Image (cartoon, rainbow, N blue to C red; front, side):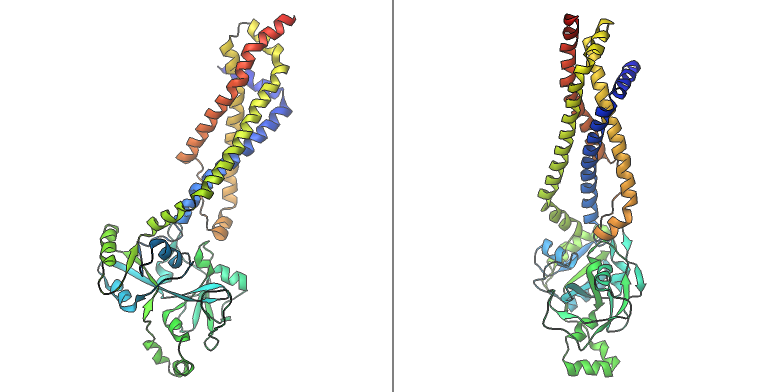
Length: 414
C-alpha cells in the first residue's frame, strides 16, 4: 500500500498545474461547506444564548413567540402589561432568586427604550453567561439618567453626560417628544452583539416621570422626595432567575394559572427553538448552496482524473505488464483522489480555524455570533466522512475506465 501511495503522490506531482487547479477547487468547495455547517450550528447556539441565565419570562398572554420577541429581541409590541402587584409577587416568591422588570413603549430616534431596575445590569447575561459590562460610565442612579447600548452610542455619537430626549411610541419618527424631561447618559455598555446594544435603559420611575403632566413634573424637580411615589402601575414583562432549575416547570404551571392577574410564563430556550425553526428554509438553502459547490468541485476532480487518462495510458499499460492487476490500477486512481481530498480537508479545517480566531471579537460585537474555534465537532466530522465517501464514489468511474481501456489501447497499437 505504501508503494501505491508513493506512486500516486509522484503521479500527482508530475501534473502540477492541473492538480493544483483541482486542489484549489476542492479546497474552496470544502471551505464553503465546512463554514456553512459550522456557522449554522454555532449560530443556532449563539442565537439561543442571546439571553442566558434566565429561567422564565413572564408577561401577559400573547403567545410565547411574541413574548420572546418583544422582551428579548425588542421586536413588536406587547398586547398588554402585567400589574405592578404581579411583579412584586414574583419578587417575593420563595422559588424566585431574582426578578428583573422590563417596561416598553417609548423610543429614542428609532432605538427602543427599556424601563428597568439596577438588577438588570447585575443579572442580565448573554452568550456563555457573559455579564453586561460598561465601556464607559456607570449604571443609572438619578431619576433622569440613562444607560445606552454600544450601537446607540456608535450610531448617534453619544458620550457620557450627553442629553437625550425620549419620544412616545416605538417608531423611528415620533410627534410626541418628552422634551420637558431630558435624560443624561450615565453609562455606555460594552458591545454584546445582542439587542442590548440597540437599547436605551432608564429607571422605572424615570419612565413614569416623563409621562406626568408639566405641573406634576415640576413638583418632582422641586421636591426630589416625591420621586418615591413614582411606582409604575404595570410592567411589560419580568425576567426570572430561580433558586432551583427543578422548580421551573412547576412555577410555570403555577403562574399560567395565577388567579389575580392574567400571566403567561415561557421558557426562553423552548421559545427560541420554535423561533429558529421558522428560519429553517434559509438554513436549508445555505446548506444546499454549499453542497452544490462541493459537488461541482468533486465533478472537477473526476474530470481531471479522466482527462489525465490519455496522458497516462502508457504508464498504466507498463504497470499492467509488470504484474499490476486491475484492482491495483483502480486503487491507484482512488489513492490520488483521496490524497487530494484529505489535503483539501486538512487545509480547509486549518484555514477556517485561523479565520475564526482572527475574527472572533468582530463577529461577537457586530453580529452576536459566539463561534467556537473547535471545528471538529461530531457533526462536522460526520460531514467530512461523507465528503470522503462521495470522493471515492466519484473517483470510481475514472478508475474503472483506466482499468478497462488502458492495456488494450496501448498493447494493440504496439
